[in-house]
Image (spheres, helix red, strand yellow):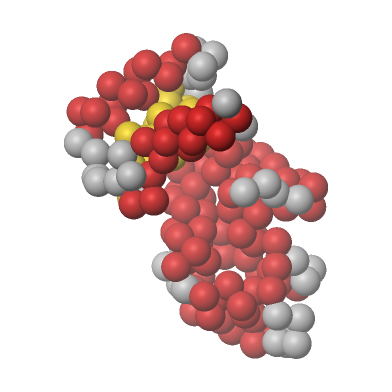
Length: 179
């Protein structure tokens, strides 16, 4: 997911503020939780992007959510509600996480496979991809994609490494039909 310029600006502002207040890890945990909530709860995502829902109703929703969050995160959420930027929250969360991981020297990625991969296998793939990561540490999350038939597919940064059986069969088919 690419974040808009607005989302990136807000994320940078929150990141710098949290860093200055020495609460970066707390705010990062809150941002991860918010991001997961947005991705998993469609109704919440719809509320964020719905301009018909009043600022007061959104404030009330964020106040309930905010009770479990660090004070700096609560203040930030209040500000984006007042400024009418709730539709940007998912992008802000994504950009914030990117900033935090980049500063820690970590590149996030995804490895898709037909079956869940053992942690040792994922770790070995992360180590092999370290050369592409320009000296940074790779962290791959494993997701299941039965359409691959076999093998795996890795996505990180703007790179795609497709070692799936589906891709290999597609290449064979293309070779046969072109000859």
